[in-house]
Image (cartoon, rainbow, N blue to C red; front, side):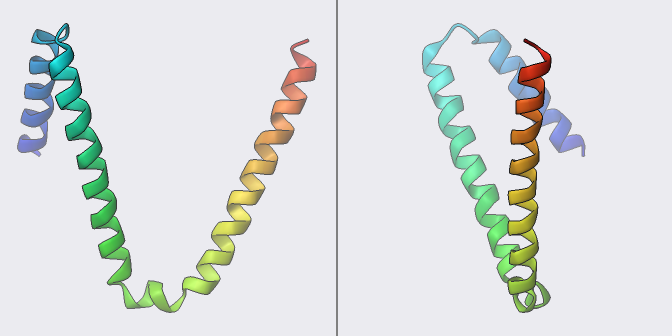
Length: 87
């Protein structure tokens, strides 16, 4: 936990000091992009190595699809309602 707090503090300090540097912003963007890709790879690796998850994937996939469609439909309906209310 101390390592995480140190990394965040050091990153914040470097970002604050070099906030006007476009080169630093590009480097930070590249590091963030690769970091996200590495995290996604690690998540996929952990999920793929879980035999119980892989066994139940068809059922879980259906539930995930239903949840995604329901959430999208609900958000769409809420947008329609709010559009009429805020007119």
